[in-house]
Image 1: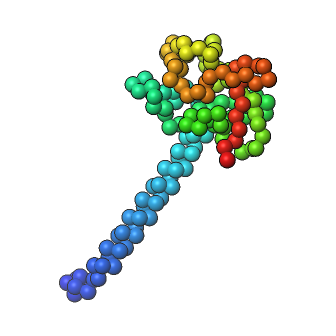
Image 2: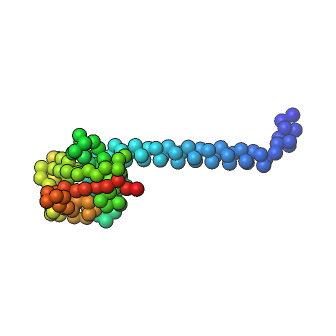
Image 3: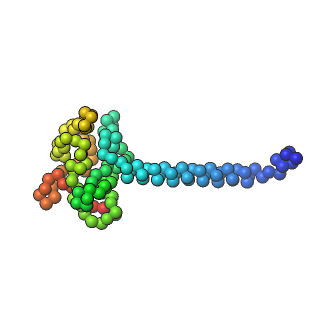
Length: 152
């Protein structure tokens, strides 16, 4: 009986079914990875982990930098290091961003220099290869302030 059943199976249909199930599984994994990456970007905090790697400082980590916008109640904003001078926020308004909030783990920070800075636990961080977003712009004569516009 089993022998008769196996003879009548259309293996083309079986292969199509397996292929469809495999495609569905791969699609679900891709969706899950996309959602997970989005959550990681939102939760990313400014730390050693998202600074340029020590082995190859020209390569930036894929996670975005997190800063606070001072004039809207320290609301978090995400900066994409690959798009200099732009910040991704759900608004078309312009915001002045206080750079000191980016480095609130440091005792001292001056974006005009490329010196080493030390975290509370003593780790040294060199920002020499950091993107141009760390360079000083004067807005209305006030140094150490940056202006970002929403990317379109």
